[in-house]
Length: 147
Ligand code: FES
Image 1 (tube, rainbow, N blue to C red):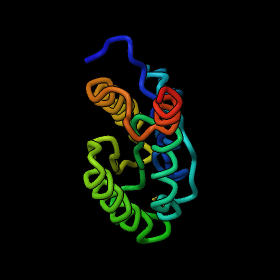
Image 2 (cartoon, rainbow, N blue to C red):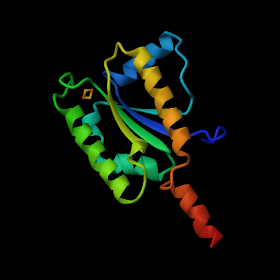
Image 3 (cartoon, rainbow, N blue to C red):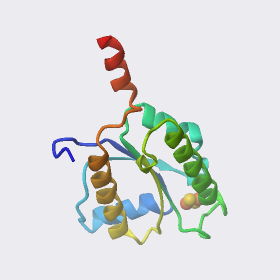
Image 4 (cartoon, rainbow, N blue to C red):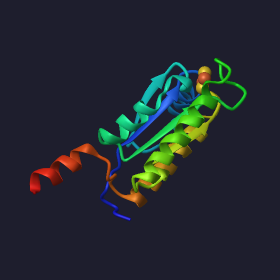
């Protein structure tokens, strides 16, 4: 593990649960790493494969989708669709030789502020362990220029 490496992590958070849990974590003054860039979405069902791939390609070392608990999505099956898409992209990552652990799905409620902070810490620790992402376009350009 490289202690100096600070991973960039994108979190797609449903506004009804994970985003609200993040707010709660803030209100509770729970500390979590500053590596997380939160993108609020109206429901995780709105997240498509291309959004996940773009986030990784654009420089994120890790990405996660945080939606409502299963059975509690405000749009009924949005989080189940997100779960399938995350699984699909994890398959793509594996096929191109990238660790699928770089993409995760979590389910939480708006009352789970401590869980939000715990997920942020877990993801940061995992990405520190994995190191910089090989599908980061910035790194590919640098390598391309070196040749
Ligand atoms: Fe939260 Fe659908 S409304 S995941």
